[in-house]
Structures are given as structure tokens and as C-alpha cells.
Length: 210
Image (cartoon, rainbow, N blue to C red; front, top):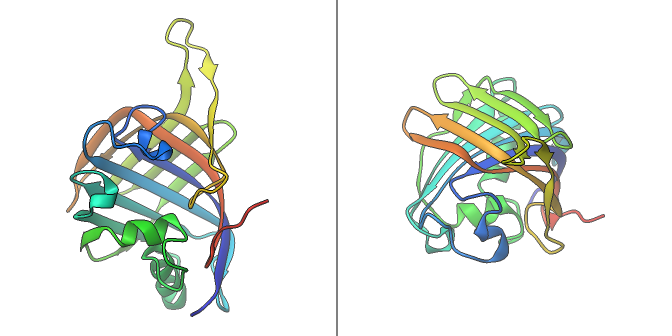
């Protein structure tokens, strides 16, 4: 098994209301789980292959709770990645060379029934985790935006966080509002639903904890 590790940032938009009950071992509030995710790898490696500066994205659909399976997924990999980097990123995203269920990638991969061929393309990704702002644009496939939660009376920005000391994705995530529209083989439309902004540090064994 090759060893890998990376530090990066992510924006995730799912179909749940703000807070996402799945983060608390609950069930998805709509009965199903649809999600769009974008990750910026700031620095990392897979074996001897460097991954610094590359981006990945994904669309997911589960007809019920994630743990019940029957999921569908489409992965996007940065066009700038060379063959070795593409292979490395796809292995990480599909839970390979990873301890069983140690990362969100490994957990989700175990529930996917339909995996579309990966798309190698330009991924426009802007992420400000502290500011709770972000956008991912993948031409012909994804348009996702994220912004801070706002007070419904005053319109002022509001900050909320989720802490998961034993989580498989992050230790701390800032929660915001996000919207996504996708086209292509997997279509969905999310408007002002759960947005997750997080700094992530993962390796073959799971979350690297401070």
C-alpha cells in the first residue's frame, strides 16, 4: 500500500438544512443525500508523487441515507495533473491505499453503486475558509457558490462551527449557506442549503489531528 498525505481546503454543499444531521449521526432531513464537493490540495503526496496545488471535485447522489448505499458518483480531476497525479488522486478519492473507512473518501466509496467515468478538466475553485466564501466552476458540469450564514432580521453575517474530534473528514468545519447547479450525467439543484467550509489534513490512516 502506498502512503499518502495532504493538507487542503474544501467546500461541500449538500441537500440538508444548515447543520446537516448526518454530522451528528442522524439521518438526512430530506430522506436522500445529494452533494457537491470541491477540494484544493495545498500540499501533499502519494508515495513519491507530489500533489501540491491540484484540485478535485465530485457530485454524489444517494437515494436514502448514505450508509444504505446504492449511491451514484462522478469525480473531477484537475486537467493540470499528469498521469501519475491523476492516478494518485483517483486512488485517494475512491478509498484505495487507505485504512478501511479511515477517510470520508473510503466511507463514501464503499456505498457507491454507480461510478461514472472520471472527468479530467479545468476546475475553477476559490476558497476562503475563515470568511466562509467559496465558488467552484466546472464548465458544462458544476456551478457551486458558498457564503456565510446571515441573521434573518439584520442580514449580518453569523458564524457557526461543527467540531468532530473523532471525525473522518475534519476536526472543525465552519458552516455556511451554499447553492449548486449541475448538468451532465448527474443533475441536481440545491439552493441555500448546508455549506461546509473546512481545512482538511488527511493521510492513509485518516484525519491527521493537531
